Length: 208
Length: 208
DNA sequence: ATCTGTGAAGCACTTCACAGCG
DNA sequence: CGCTGTGAAGTGCTTCACAGAT
Image (cartoon, rainbow over all chains, first blue to last red; front, side, top):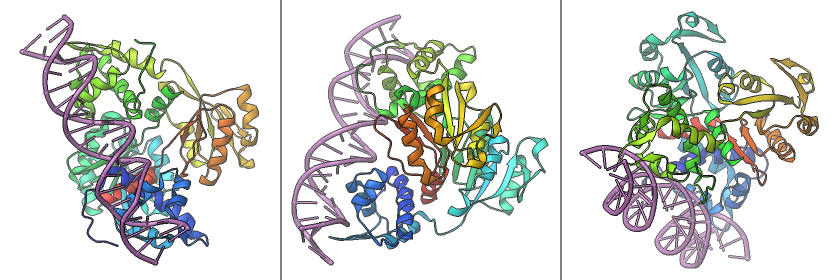
């Protein structure tokens, strides 16, 4: 478990690590203790050499002629990705989409908690949704200085999105998950990743 | 507007075309008629040469020293991507996530219609949601032969996902949008694209 | 003068192939 | 003998740079 990650790590490598974490937790839940790059590759449809090279950026986790200890490798990757802690998130936009995000069951088991909810629409401010009370997005800065978060989730209309992301950046939120159909200029130092099902469908239609 | 798309087109190019469509429809809605690759590039944070090369795979849409006619280019790309028709979709899985997908307002304006809904859980079969009656996923093949679709949307638990995708493939559904947190072996000839917010969050945590 | 279209160069990611080690 | 770790080769995508058109 190297503290010094020396070389620049390709973005694609980082994107694959969570996949490795996912299959390793399945495997280490079972009795199987040792796993090879080929087995992982079969499960994920990734070339085994790719997996070995990806892992080599972070340390020497395997035993030659043997494979990887599933639990040990899992722990190492969890540590690398910072998944051994809770991540606090703020949702901006509690329209239909935002409420579905609030209700999504997949975040909490992975350590991602929505701890604040905001909206720009006056009618929605003050409403209780589950454990949260919706706050005025114009006071986002104030609220997040009291109760800081690591991640912003944006579910506002496209035209509002750049402003909301800028506001989040001002509050020191460096990671944003954007659900709105807006092209994004990520502010310097911030990471914005967008989830847009329509874009995905529109590119699949070409292939069909 | 070339009918013959000769060269193999990089997947990344296809993924960018919907972005071009989106900004072009914004632009051609306004009075601006001419647009340059630099203007498009500024809006999307894409290098202008990238845009020109992407477009060159499909034809000669620009005028040298001038730029592109926004409306003309939009039409061409809409035609290339097949967005000038309706796409019929079947949703499999009407749990909390599936119901949110059914309620999502973003599909219909872009020509994507959910025309069938299925579930594996007996308790949910027969329920009416909006215009649709949930059908038994075990009879998917039967229902889709009556009422064929172009796209499948999968929102079932991870363990069910491979089976559902295989079933859809049997019914001739070549494009699948998968919302479940499952690693997918796309059946030969089928295109599966996954939307998994947790994977995105987990890779952003490395950067933070 | 300006902006397109495109070979060629550059860069980044993937896969090969094999030395090294258990 | 089997599987890892990794330079080197291969592949594919992006950007440059400039001829060509208006």
